[in-house]
Length: 254
Image 1 (cartoon, one colour):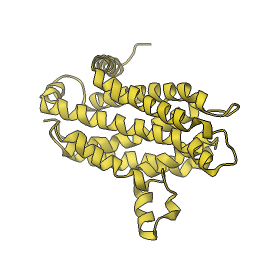
Image 2: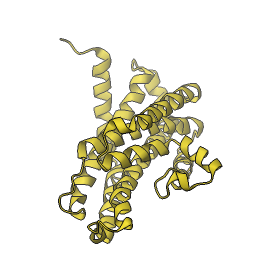
Image 3: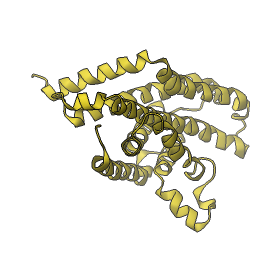
């Protein structure tokens, strides 16, 4: 059965973007090496405490450390996308791509696929390298956790398209993206339970795109079934739908 032309074009463009990404050392360092390195350093620093099952602090670390690293991977992935789209627009590459037979959807999907592929590689390496810092007998749900991170990253990438659309220059796109995404970290339940916040701040926290991602990743890491996090999955899909709709209205190719 012949492969549709659209899929062939998507595969070729995705492979081309992968090669471009690999040839850029800063991309690999920022999206793969740094997240894994942070996880390993933190793991070596506090790893001896993770075996203390009676310690509440150890229990928090056992879940919080990998989730923090995973969220860091997702944010770096989105910032990389924001930077690339801004560079392509400023350099006229998007304008030239739009003039080719490739559809805008094919171009954007290729970028998303590249980011998801490297996200999967990074989190897999992170978990495999970090196994030694977890107590013996602890089952690490590599596949489920990776899928949860891919879903979370896919959802948050749509927010990245909005940022890349509104900030037109490559000079300012990454700093603005960092400000938007990292400012969510204190309120998404990663460092402090959302229920501990004042009532008004709880409403804001639950509306943040990172909040369902943190909840899903934390639950999956602890061995919860996906059925226990259908609300988080629905929220991530809703974030993607809303942000994609907004991005489609404000996105500019030049």
